[in-house]
Length: 457
Image (cartoon, rainbow, N blue to C red; front, side, top):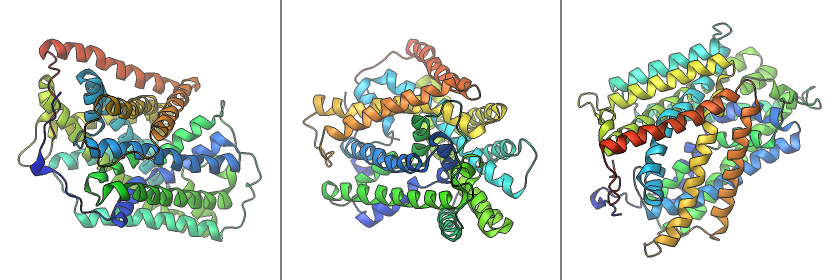
């Protein structure tokens, strides 16, 4: 299979270690840290296991990022995992991955982030029993429409959203330090019907999500062989330290039981220490941050749909780029409709955020596992290709990463035992499998050409 090279568009190594660390931290720390701690507390039940889960999240992220760094520097491509899977396993599996991103992974993530926005917006202005769902649905519709119209987000807007996120974390940390030990600290956290450390790790790793995007910085990092490991260690180390400190603040201010029953843990901590005005202020900051993350996910997901439409002729309608708005209009509309449907389904379960995690997790970890395996395949079948960055201590990191992926896949499937979200697990898998007959139909229209590889978009 030949690779289509575009040397004129190749990124240049201009980033320092400091630049890379700042970008990694900015990419990874999102809205999850303001939502998932309560769910982790409910699935661990004691402080030691709770903090261990957050520490392990950093270790898992580091192993995965080291593997992705080698893949991204050896086979740089705008398609990312889509391109790696195409090269290693062929066109059919790459198609199923693109289908999964369009119908499960990316759209489910949009709905998840929208529910985080809804939870904190409801702290500001409650809209009844379905307040969080109403806000989530409104956010998906509004942001999709704005993206279709071609509304551009300026650099100052992104800086403002990042500042809001950082300020929110600082307030949480300060409030936790000022808080008196909670009366609930010693109380046992209410356990779910089937408590599981694996389920806790699903929520932890959602909060760490984004390191796979950070690994793509390797193409622009100076002296990548020496500096990539340093940047990843410092970046993910900083994120782990921040998460541990923030969760210690939650523990001190609310205790395990208080965290486990909270739907907006940061707001509840600020309410306990600084009163209602503190809860309102931090809720505003977090709602803004979650809204920005939702918008970014809508933006990037639509570009993936556009690339998918370019590679598969029968899906050409997704590959339409509107010249006036400079947006992939059809990709945005299809993505928005799917995300809207998922938000409605999540609302019907009564556990919107948790339902979306259940819907996306098995499919996400399945393809994460396959991407980890591509490193072994490329080392075996393509040893002659120059590798700007080599995974340290190979094959240990990819072995550990793949083993963790298997464990997380098993843990996410165990969600099916839950009455409230089990159907969402099964639905996510069913939607993935629906891509198979679609693929067979497309093969009849466009026969497979093994010599072709996806072009960069």
